[in-house]
Length: 313
Image (cartoon, rainbow, N blue to C red; front, side, top):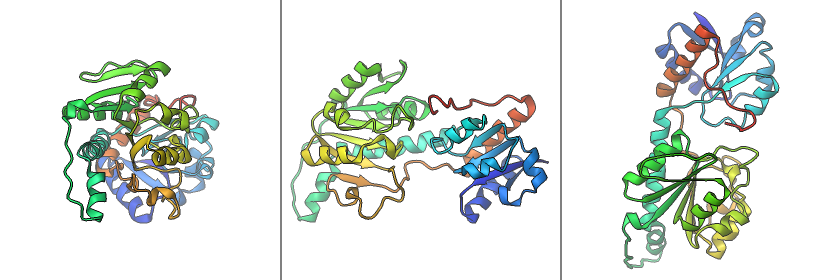
């Protein structure tokens, strides 16, 4: 059996779930927590599986050359790996793309059917009906057209919405108007009734949604963030919500999690908060993918699709 160090900050219960999933997916691989490794095992390890690993954990494996991350996001670990010249592969799980696109579609349909307004009316026992426009009269802009963004954009188009997508480089997706560059972003923001954030958190995207960004959005448009909390300048968003520039925000990710009790998002009438549940890595689907990447590395000494430290994804 091949011993694989498991570096994480999970509960022991979740640790056991992941180890069981790996055992089922790859009986020849033994996933073992860092605390259970001998000094010799730490010294000889060249690969590892990461789940919110700490930099001190990486330092305990002096000969590590490649690591498989269990999550799609790598902003918490990519710099530490780059500093140690460790190749890092993020989790790319089709199940996660499907689950996240389901959340975005639910949020978009909720906004499209004006559920936030009916929720406010219910609090005052108000019976007022509102006209529902056709889905094709609504434009939804998806920022970030990687695997998850592409699946999400296609799902929204299947629901009948006009879908525009934006990425750093030009894409071509059926039934989606694809844009790129600064001019493309400005054009999308001015046209979209809802803007979905699916960008990675990098130096280039941190605080992307600031006062300038929000001022370019269509008056009263909604924002859906299922990517990373650091994409948004919270104060700027609250100001836009208070002023009516942004009609509603559906937020699943935040700069600090759990979201502090005193944070204004909790009580704001035009904000929907969910506790980072849009998509979670499922051991039963992710473990086979990670195991396949590990087998490929062991067989070829080649690292599967490593993250670019410069881009951050």
